[in-house]
Length: 296
Length: 219
Image 1 (cartoon, each protein chain N blue to C red):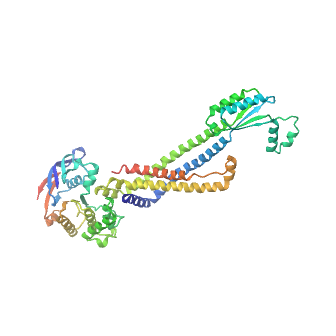
Image 2: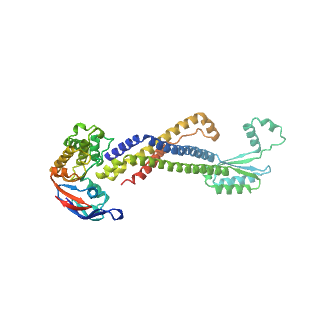
Image 3: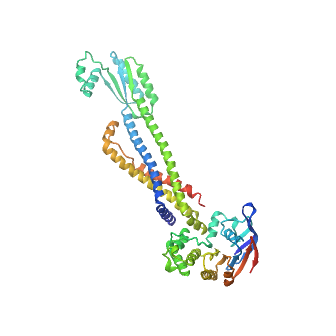
């Protein structure tokens, strides 16, 4: 405890002595973690979009006008037997026309002038969320249903959702790459600031070595210095992120939420904020340790 | 207390700073190391501080062969040695009190023990009234007394001093030497390197004269 007190007080004093370079290091760490936080917010919300859309994924089996009840029964048996359906519903040609008129009231008068109802009857299947992970089974079901007599066409969202998931993974990958580069830059900046501090304290270090101070006492303040810088940078990143997020949400939040079909856009969960701070401290610790290792 | 057996220290290109040096300093003894510049006085002190190791021979302090110490044992050994340098090696941004208390602090002593020991030694060297001053506000003699207080605060068994009066006038030099005599009177072994023969004469202790890395005279 006494040693820890010593490390922290020495580190704080050293940071204060070299405050301009320390501020630069803190800002660099903050920039890196700000970008990381931004990607995490985007990723978390996109995951929610994917999950929500995944829950709402549907398969539409459009029927030919001459489809018989036995064809319909075959379709129903195949859907139920697959175990992929959460709900299923038959939509007749008349129901389809009514639905169209309700959803597009501006176009409803035009349908009144039609000689015949152009909308096909369909069998609407809402897929289970697990079906997102059982892509081949869904593909197989769609292909089988497509081959049933009386079925005109099978349409479903899986490919689109797969593309969305792939896009999320891609954005996440790019984010990770940028974050990794910024993390390296931040670590190097911390290491340089700590190295300057080590140079400024070379007389103290020499005396500590000559009086036989334990190595932990010689090195500890440098590691503590890195940890303090990393923690401060992470805290700054989260505060800035929260401010920017609040401002953006106040202005564009409802628009974005509506566009994505979410109730609201959410900030990082508390656990992730804590993890970011710990990550920042760890980054600073690594920078400090890189310098401390050279002090013998 | 200190034994050197055929110690040599060779630097690059075959230059010897010490050559086949043997000596013995008993526990509680006060010994001067003297000789011209480049004689090897500071090299011997560096070896005794275990900043370097001999190229040949054995240097034994308190029964421990310094060349065989592990890094952790070096730390432990150095805690039994106090050092004083010509340039004082004080921390200019710290007060007198902080300079002296720095040693017990980095050795992990408790706060009350730090304060007690620091005040004790500052009182002993006569600087208790200047403990909140910064080194640059003090005279050379006072600065050297801070360095001596710092060397003493850990109750060392040996004090090594390298030209401790090199930057001081004759009166202050004698004052500092009197402090070393008092330290020695308390049982601490004292080894002082100086080229000031007049000072050695006035203090009147055993002196080993080095020349080109070898003992040239014992007086």
